[in-house]
Length: 366
Image 1: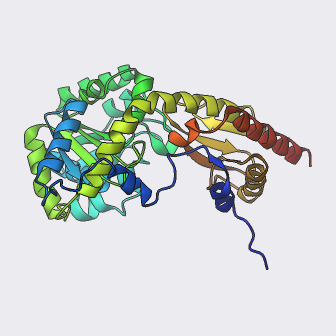
Image 2: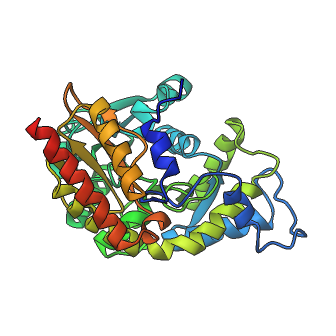
Image 3: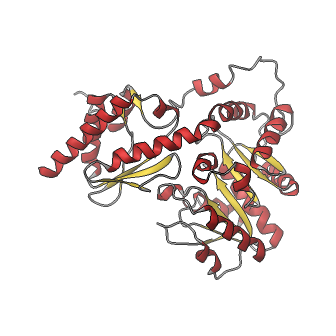
């Protein structure tokens, strides 16, 4: 029996794919090594020219005194919370109910560091000034994720951020930025990374999301904070004998893509407008504030998988390979734009949405 084609198969087989930077295969590493001579000396247990120079480069970009490279953001952020809690002597931190530390890390913060989270705001809303001011418990640190991925990448205004930052400093609460997608929000705020990071005591950024490197993260802040983070990195087993494959790819793709965030952001707004013209489809936010957003569809997941797969087969353009249920007759998926979107011919993209909208309208008439 012939195997039924799945949505992911159809997406992978499409001539063009609108999301991401391309396949995450070994070529991601090979391309990043193309400008190396092979004579560069490896970093060793967190020291050496390769790691030192990259840390200094990103610290300057973020406007922070010091920065430390980590193999993962999960490790970096738990350590940041531990340092701030130890400093103040209160084992509590505040963050959004859909924060990465709360829903994707198997309770690592609680089990490894015995730190209690205080959840702020409604899960479907971003943290605002009132949430912080009305917090009942004393905490060592407030973590803000910009953008808030699990609710479509929503953002507070810069003025709201400034107010929260001022309040936290007045009350002696450290403010930490989960900036996994920091680079992607700079066009919306029309600010430099250093201007945004100036509002925060510590900052984490990722090098495999919008940047598209192999893996890795930076944790940045004051020098004494960075030095403490190095000790905790060793305790966590994060000081691999060599991190250079991650560092070299992070550096290579940072230089290649950080300047394209404006293009990705513009593309997200264009693409969201096309989705919002389709029957029973709406994006969250309606107008994206970064290169990412969510697409919500008033149709069952299994039915939409067939509609999308057929659309890709006819147009040659893949929109997504994954759908998630959102109730009995609704589904949604996440969009994150990168280099792939810039390569899709405009006529092919419009043809895809014409076909999709026609299929969705036909479905509602049945």
